[in-house]
Image 1 (cartoon, helix red, strand yellow):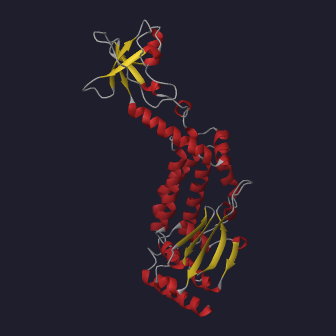
Image 2: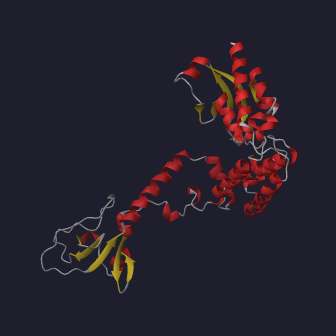
Image 3: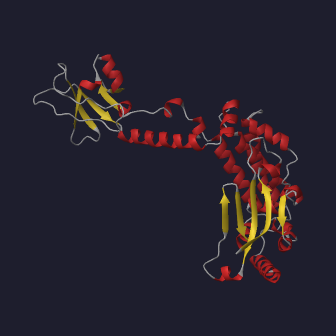
Length: 347
């Protein structure tokens, strides 16, 4: 059996950056009884849904020791976001400031850097070019070699007033994905054409002896396979995308995800506060500014520029702070034992 000893609302609701369509996310901590801990019943984390998860006390303390931003924020949850808190959790809360160490420069700073990379990633599916998300067929990947250049077969056929359904292809030895193209001018040889509209491959035909090839073509099979993979991923993304986030990014047309940059700015501000004020302000005093970033109402390139400057400053801020380098494993171990004994007595 598990018992929840702490539960809080997290994410945008706790930061003060929620909008009308924001979900309500929950995180918390639970403790397992002695039988579960001593057998195969131990579970370090329970994911109730994508919006709700809980950490077993030992896992929670491990994450705190590594300066994980998500769990550190739980210790500083705004009062109006705390749904449940058992007395045993106060044993951790009494030492919450001890978990603020110089490790935070890499955890908070690392998360911030990751958000920049996500925000400006040109390969984000919401920014994919139109031609990349239109379903193509093998014919779009067949090229003719002509006069030292390659030309798309459909263009070549148009230039020569030919129809692809009267073409016949024969594979060439020692020429990967290379084919000889023949044309049935009389339209009576039963050539199969280059490709059917709904096919995923090109077609081969039987060619009469002594017939001369009209051209040498190449089917970029790898390119077509990549296109199919990209297209399927895009369709899956369309079905599962965060509609509001897509609308926001499309509206400001900066091709940068404002929500990623909002998180980047928040993480950097929190890191600076840890180094200079030795605390975490979960409810953000600049929530309105953060929402402006999310909506793209200001230059997102400028936000990135400022963030990259602050990232460079972080190392120096933490180096000159009197925060401990890390919290000792023996302290965390003793704290966990104290919690286990306290919990056992309360049962």
